[in-house]
Amino acid sequence: MIWTKEKRYRRIEEASQEELLKLRSEVNGCKWRQSYHIQPETGLLNDPNGFSYFNGEYHLFYQWFPLGPVHGLKYWYHTKSKDLVHWENVGIGIEPTTAYDSHGAYSGSAIEHEGKLYLLYTGNTRDDNWVRHPFQCMAIMDQSGEIVKLERPVIDRVPAGYTDHFRDPKIWKEGNEFFAVIGAQRLNETGCVVLYRSEDLLHWAFAGEISTSLENFGYMWECPDYFTLQDKGVLIFSPQGIEPKGDQFENIYQSGYVLGSQLVPNQLSLSHGSFYELDRGFDFYAPQTMVNPDGRRILVGWMGLPEIEYPTDKNGWAHCLTLPRELSIKEGKLIQQPVKELQTLRGQQYEANAVLADESRGFAGFSGTAYELIAEFADFDASKFGIEFRVGKDEKTVVQYDAVQKKVILDRTNSGEVVGEDYGTVRKCSLDAPVIKFHLFVDVSSVEIFINDGEEVFTSRIFPKEDSHGIRFFATGGKANLCAVKFEV
Image 1 (cartoon, rainbow, N blue to C red):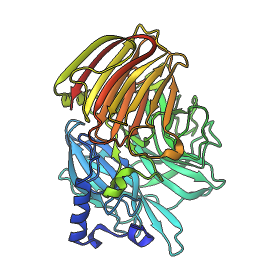
Image 2 (image 1 turned 180 degrees about the horizontal axis):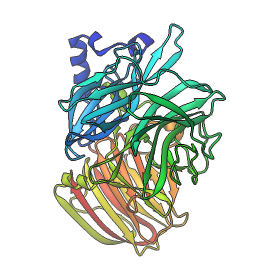
Image 3 (image 1 turned 90 degrees about the vertical axis):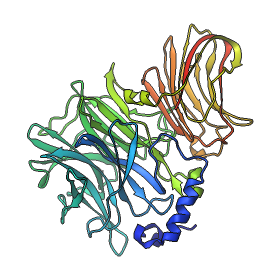
Image 4 (image 1 turned 30 degrees about the horizontal axis):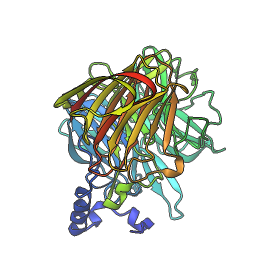
């Protein structure tokens, strides 16, 4: 299908029942549908939005174009969960129905206040010349789940000095005051983040641009998220227009963070260290965090990237969300670990212990297309060691440690149908440690790999054949002690 502007901006009710049934049939027939990740029923999913805990449940919305695997007229789709693991599809949460979100309900966030959940999002509009005009809009969800939009935007203009690339408000409360960071582009086409403040969530005042040491760092900063963690200030954002540098910044767009002193709103400055990528894999963007009832800072990201074609497109759908991750700080770095609740997915367990000596080995019970796998390599003198998974006749995905270069390497060159090949098929990061632990969550068409308890994470989509389900452990140029456990999911 050729996706003209008219087709991209059709509303779901404009599609016939026959068209919707045909699309759903195409999606359900896709061999790459996930088994335990959030994915769209049809069409395209992107940024996680409104991640929050309200009325005894977790609520997570996402950007959704229902009629095909393209970025078109965006809705907020609503899912909810009691445990961060089993998610229930609620349905459309926010529709683009007004003059202030006529061309899409774009990304935003949520906060509970006085027994209601306030959803602050960017309304995207276009004029007759297709020029963008963004508004920051508010919708309110009551305890019955009904969502009502305010008639007018709560922020109705872009402040002087910035272009109409002005979106993705992330809201929080400090003391008796509410704050929101918004991703922005200066008139000189460089990216930044600005701050707003409010006493009642309905009337917002522009506080100014947050000063950082990243003055010329890409042309747009999307999906900012500021929070404090272990007495530090953390600013997560997704800068566009960063050039690759060594093993860094190799995706079309990046997501990462700076960590430093806490933001003082009246001073509008953030003292921080270097920008670090949150994820070293191929498919991760636009993450959002929330604090759950027991005080953990939880992150979910979009497992995908803009402007990349994916093999599922031909089946009428695209993308999914990552598993929830708990954040902490260790030695000046954000650590990401799978939330403990995911252990409830664990089914039958298999174990393997061996000394691998210049060999590749499989073990009984170690195969599959959806599982959790933890493998620890110690006492090694091998030059390389690691895991081949989703192995088939001519397919495999490889995660390995190069002990000579002291690098973790993820290789999806032979993972199946190709995706994003223009940006390479190998990702690497440096790591120097006496023990290397790979913690994999493999699903039908993805893998999330946590290295050494979350010091690094590699998130990637993979598209192998259904019969590519082997797992092999290997060591090259010496020995490595292996201790592995696999759980059916």
